[in-house]
Image 1: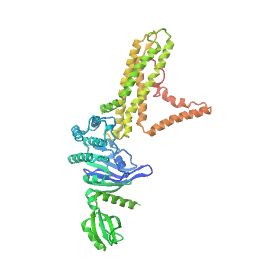
Image 2: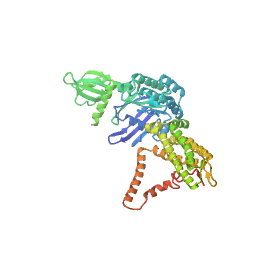
Image 3: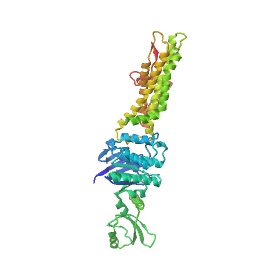
Image 4: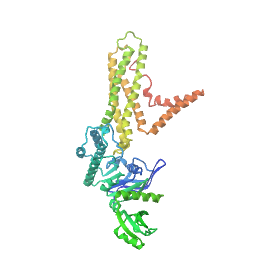
Length: 300
Length: 218
């Protein structure tokens, strides 16, 4: 499988308290890769490192087969970036912002820009500094899509947008991806939003990549089990035990949160003298929380 | 690319360039009138040339203000966005800097032209005694070079980080402090002269801004 983004042992430090260490990302080409993490986990810093806007202390970064940050300007011919904070020149009008962007991006398609401008109901004469948050989000997405990139790097692109605008922006993104097969790297702390659109997910926490796996594995593999007479040590359990706590029902009952669960695995409990009472699907957000809890516990 | 950058930068500095052009047009006219070359009542040539020289000091001042204004207009939109837009454009950084610099340089032209036309108008209306000559073209050219030097210096400073600016300003303040301490200690060493003179005397880059600016001279 080829990778649109690949990092090895990426290391970066900002001040004394924050560090990204040993980051090894593999974003498959053509994937919509959701980059999840709580606020302050290092998502934006990682994106800025990937784009060459920050210099790593160590490790390697390859984006679309190019070494970053050395080949940064070559990469930006094929990469669109929507930053967390709008970066457009405030004094420009929407029309000027589009013209400026078009002048620098060789694959820019004016017809698509016009179509999106109409679909998003953007006023071409409105000044960028006067745009509402929703209009700014739409304009940023318009600029990103009309430059026809092979890779979209979106840093919380829907953060703070109302549900209607969010839907419009994500629909435009999905239409583009289904038409072109482009790769999307989208960061968010809104788990449910990524659940709907992503096929891969990477989870950051405190500067480290906690998990990276296909979305279906992430969604389907994390379960909450109610177990009676649970063993003290899980031993050679065929799944990964993420968390365990005393159950609130029958005495001797524990609640286990596990990853990599398959229906056939109930035999394991019979083998260790335990009884499996209940298997509950966790939604992505619950799975995400459990994942973070486990990762933090393991680091202590 | 250049057209777009020029358009953006032109809009940001339109008011400043217009005001500078009006000032550039007026300074030569004012210099000639003040010196008494228009309808002269007597011919005190030395006095008149002193007046021309005195009014001429407005040219480097205007050049510095213009350079400052254009350099700030060139970089302030990028500073506001922490340079993210520029850094994510598919061109090398040096290329972007050249585009920005070139746009500002082109914006100097209307003001230089205004100084030249102002000089022509002023000297055309003046009665020039024998032995004196007028230099509207030379003044305009020198003004253009001075404005370019001022623009380039502030542009370079503004392109850097706050840390770079702090280092440069800190160095200047340090030199002045050292000089003050030496004077307090009655040590006769002119640090200012040795550190700043290479910049302001030929072939220093700021030499253009100093000396006499004579629209009318022998």
